[in-house]
Image (cartoon, rainbow, N blue to C red; front, top):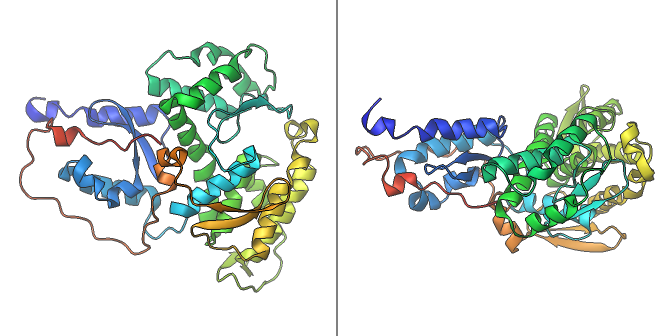
Length: 382
């Protein structure tokens, strides 16, 4: 290998980085290395914005465009743009009492899951907090402030223990990094989307959900119940909901689902799902979810969505009306706050459903592959 090609091994190293960070299934973004070896997040919306001409060599436009289509698939109607921003903020209300992204949040809720922390309630007694920490290690390149907890966190993630022994200053370190470390915030954004948002949207796509409110409900359920197929997980709740569909049900949502050979209005299905979720919150099947009767105290999440349904808040634009955790009506607006500006993929506009034409690269031979324009591929922090 010689000449210009020998200088392009960053292509392979970038994919090796993505493999190391478990970026296996791509939704609306993917974490890679740029041409200087620095971690960056490529979003689908980048491939359709004018930023490409300023930040990416023209020879890379076709690649990014293909990447975009591969990540989402042409014509998907999953949450994006302001609708995704609203969904994230609505869940923030239930998790933290306001719409802000509390990367620094950390406490022991005594709910059988150890410390709960960050924007998605990552728990030391489950695997998600450990996933955040491992990705943070990758982004920092090695030892960092979280390294002191590695052995303990790995053990608790494997056993599901709610013990906080060996984590005496865990919340102090989490709060410090969550307040001012961009890489730690990026790790939280990535793991939230990978473990909760993307799986929820995959289930929504399988069901054929078209309304923002139904898709957002699946995301909120994934955050609290988990996105898996355990007895309290999102997949199990969907299965129990579908079992209740025994006849055609008409409605006015404008979207009809095919379940068990029956046609059911999407909002009618969502109402059934909320009944199933309420029952699960009040009577968790899994022992680890029964600690302190905590789940039974969170049925306000369901009541909030039922309130929005009564107002026919089916398709979300720039705002949505819900109930806060005290049962008071509030309006959540599409965020342009500094915290959400970092999370660019939550606020970028949705794609059009029609397949766009692939831009044609210039036929002129590109210059030295190590030129300045070819190196620049930064998407910025989440």
